[in-house]
Image (cartoon, rainbow, N blue to C red; front, side, top):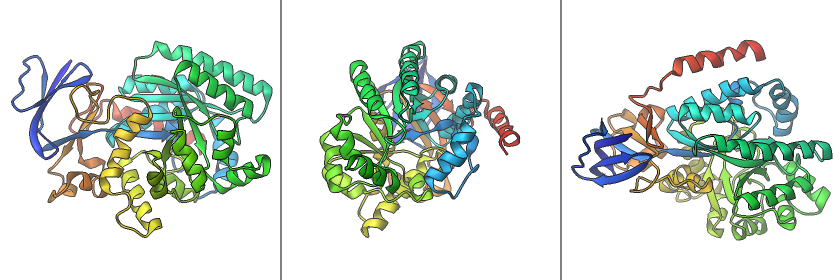
Length: 415
């Protein structure tokens, strides 16, 4: 399939963009392609779509189920018990709702960690998105449970090959307080042998740090460095409670850090040290976390709050400017997950948005990127394209009413 976008604004200039297959093939004036489906880009801007670098997608079914709680209380007493009741079909419907929400708000790719892997993979395939998926790996230092989890990971790695190349497999050890040292060492070795990413929560709370100090005599990042776990394949979510030494270790080992400002603030986990991370050269992308701790998957909101939060804690309005927040939400997320997208550029994977420049939130229109970070919302998006396919046009996603209706049925079951 070919798509020709005519007369859209790109970097301030009106141009045409041709998509052939799943990549941008030509960008310029007066492009002709008789066999292409034509999209009128007049009054619209073409920008990269968002890549959400940390999610638990099917937590959409637990949106607003348990709010205003401390993290460990929230997890142990509310979330994990309810998740234990969910089967693969439940997770599939939750993931469909998540994919719908992400598409409607401009996200085409996400990095997920949750139960019932194939339920999420099915939803991603059907909705046309791109995803790096890991099944939650938790063993609580139980050798029998650890063996089961390793076998499951190995099996899922092989079974992922049955999906399209938009569905990629990663390992998902939950955190250092839920996964044994032996399993973390295994995950590192398996990832290196098979060129895989590892998705983990790291230094999210003060309790996690205090427990690590008590058990190992060092902090979480230091302990992972000690056991040889750190490396460029690691995608570490949150990373809130870290010292300058730990930030240096993250930079040295080229760990991919994911900032989750809304979730961190809602759970009162702590303040992310963006300025220090940037100054040391740590790679940082942006994520929403799950819908039970955010409570949405909106990267517009995440960009704005990340920028505002950084300025507030540093007492410096120049910290984390709009263009950096936008890159964190687009190109940096793509690079963290190993995808060749995140830019409107010839040869890149065709993941993009058409933004409606007539929307009131984008007027008068001095700086588009500033407007997208500080002013825009999902209502500004007209069209969403992923892998060269149209997922949303004129603000509508095929089948969205049925997806929402099916998700609403869970209120009766879980209430």
